[in-house]
Image (cartoon, rainbow, N blue to C red; front, side, top):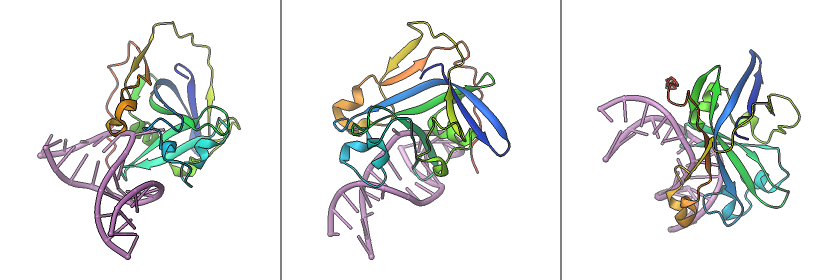
Length: 169
DNA sequence: TATTTGATTCTT
DNA sequence: AGAATCAAATAT
């Protein structure tokens, strides 16, 4: 997914963000994956077919956007952590969702339907080696699973020049 | 019904 | 290091 575009359409227009950083959450054994504690109303979507969004509220303040991956029956998803919009880095899942106006109304959306939110391949070739692998963030509670190098980030020249948007209310 | 927690971000 | 802030999970 790195280098592809996340496109968001709302009432006011279309915003496209190049995907810079993602994290993978893979399977029922992955203690960091929300599905590791079994099926609940909240995590049910993770067990379904791929291509469906999973948006949840975290810490009472921020939304996180994921997309379900893998076949139906095997729970897995990818968290979108950072995108680049018009050359500006939006770094962090909470900031990203605020910037693109993504909230729980977009939970369980079919992202292959081309409505409200979808992915596009705009042909940007990502060189091998341009993608770094790192441990996932904020999952220390997951024991050994916290050490898995399942965070992937595109090393961009603009990687450090992004402005920090003030997201306070 | 009550308490704890969390795939974050911001201020101090 | 701590606050903001709440739905979902867990404990009671």
